[in-house]
Length: 364
Image (cartoon, rainbow, N blue to C red; front, side):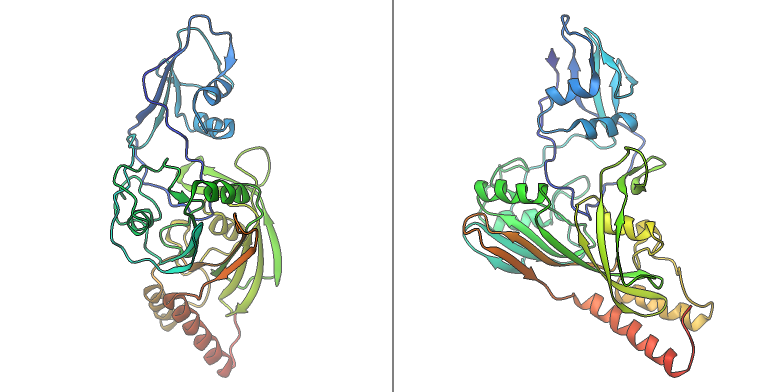
């Protein structure tokens, strides 16, 4: 079997809840090409590819086939397709292949905790976690490379680059960074085994009915819009996802909730909360930047728009992070304060709710 492209380790990071996606394009770019050997026995293509691409799962290959990204002799095939001798297999994506070099950049970091093995960083909203399509500099990884004196020849596959989970550009909060290959492996296993503790604070639209609850439903790419994630409550589409939530404060038209992740899927909290009818406040991608609850009065609309300006991103913060230290085996538990934009947003809703109660009105 000949391979026309250099094999690349598939992104093995835990798919944390808030990974941002790159922009969609109708043009497809080839990332892998294989020519099947003459003596190849019939074999499902997802199994064949998982045997020949390091670090990629059959589940992800099946998703790629569903998205028509797996081609045989230039035609898309299903994951059940049986490869034949001399088949030309391609994997195409909507962005060019790019071997990201990590350029160290002097960007300030808010380090909550650090020792010889790891550090925990409080990432501000608006900062992309790692280089990707359209974001080749100015990321958290560029800042880490500078802080730890990494050289310019390092790539995302370098074992020293200790990013073990991630959050979306417009989500603030705690991220765990390994500083040694051993720590990276140990912490990655903890995320894979779901033994870490991660709690988020979110402001969501609507008055959440129950004081606490659990949301379950597989999460995968929306077949109609690959920029969005979607809950698949039945069948085998998507990946298992579980979110536990607890109401912290009610403001009538919006609710402040604490969410604890049992799994870490792309956009998990955002998608799960929308699934139960409570989209995150000002979450543009999932429709939270519209006024979803409240009155039709002009003053109320102006109040909400002012809130959008005060917190110009989805109201989501990764507040706590718990894990076992890879060297000392000590249970670590770190917290971060809500950033000023979310504190300001909550203050505004608290004052608005108190003023409505004084006037004797009721929330709907």
